[in-house]
Image 1 (cartoon, protein in one colour):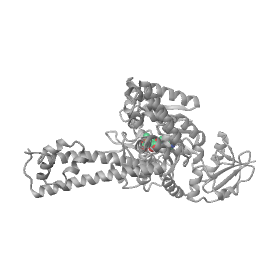
Image 2 (cartoon, chains in turn purple, blue; image 1 turned 180 degrees about the vertical axis):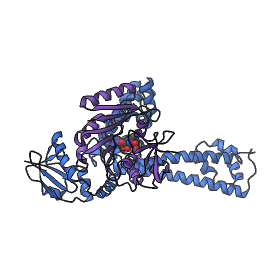
Image 3 (tube, helix red, strand yellow; image 1 turned 135 degrees about the horizontal axis):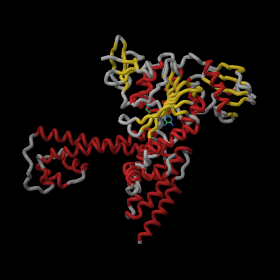
Image 4 (cartoon, chains in turn green, yellow; image 1 turned 60 degrees about the horizontal axis):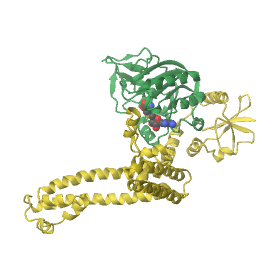
Length: 223
Length: 332
Ligand SMILES: C[S@@+](CC[C@H](N)C(=O)[O-])C[C@H]1O[C@@H](n2cnc3c(N)ncnc32)[C@H](O)[C@@H]1O
């Protein structure tokens, strides 16, 4: 087997079957049961598209993946850290993820699973109240939001307003059902897209996440 | 006038052009970081805040704030640069302490009511198996007593001959029993009875917890239904912010989803359906009663969650009973 760095982001790798990998920042530690493999003396963790919406978006060719070594990231809805752990691999020890989640129970999972990954800072807070964590979070290069809430666009805007650097990027995962169960997902995604543009986001790209995640869309935005 | 921002290492002070003027070093303890995250200004910080200071983007009771986006961004640019590379380990402890603080007694209620459901499922399975075993030796009794617990209590520890006399059975279709068989059968039965006892203890315990944590909800909804509603919502506060139309159908999510996607009739009630005031009404009146009940439950939950200690259940129950009587009359 051979691992090939993606041309969109050389810190993300694929094998010949197009399974994705990142170089493991904490050797020997698997975060959510993903496979660890050795390649040319380095350890890599498989990045499973069924578990992570970002991995799915990469496989569905979202194109640009603007995450770099040393980046500061504000992650809204970090949950147990499945996706965040791979971002943590990419940004390395010089980078930092501020991981917000409202659910204490899931944060307990996160604290257990991130183990030695000290580039993730878990924060118990509600993403719709950014004024409360304004005391901790600095300006960031990237905002990642996946919170499955009806008012997720407003929440995103309020956070980006305060924390995203000029020209910074946003990954925004939208689950149609959490906005309206009875509407056609395509209509919902169109409306969300319009709202985002009205606010002044540039939609760099957007991809549906089927078959990995049903009725989901990943938006890549730039401010 | 000066602008200020509190951060874990101290207070940043800016002038009106948002140039940094001062940094007052106050290394916050973990518990003080939690205070700030929940909107409380620690005492040690308060003493540095002068009359004409305005917090940028942060809101603390009794102090002035300015939420102008561009000002906040400008200040945060400067702060971010100064904080480059500072030690973050403090936040781990703060988050751990925050989690510990957030665990409330309604979470215990949720776990116990779910355990009760588990026990019901497990005992049902076990009794059914127990009956199968017993049928090998004395099938007649099992048919006579439908209630599981009563059945267990009637047969455990008794010899077959005595049971046959007791239940007036001349000839049994059951097979032969050895002493060892009887011994094992009794042991199994006793363990299941123990589980029934545990179930009863937990039922009382849920009632106690409900009366302690949310007396209004407990009285209006009944302790068990109240506990189930809390579990379905994910917590007391979570329940308290739901509209009463949602409370009315909590526990009937599948039917609701089908209604929204397939256009079937909407569900009239979820777990509140088991409430005695609904059960005692004829089918036709139940939907109307469910609506009233849900609205009273919504009020009760709000009081319990946001003004703990206040008791309003008496008037709520009175209103419920009035509505109940009205609906009962309508029938005639
Ligand atoms: C679908 S999960 C995120 C999964 C995660 N992004 C991953 O790929 O590993 C959604 C998370 O958002 C959190 N959440 C929901 N509402 C929130 C809010 N208002 N503020 C912060 N987190 C929220 C939930 O607790 C949950 O953990």
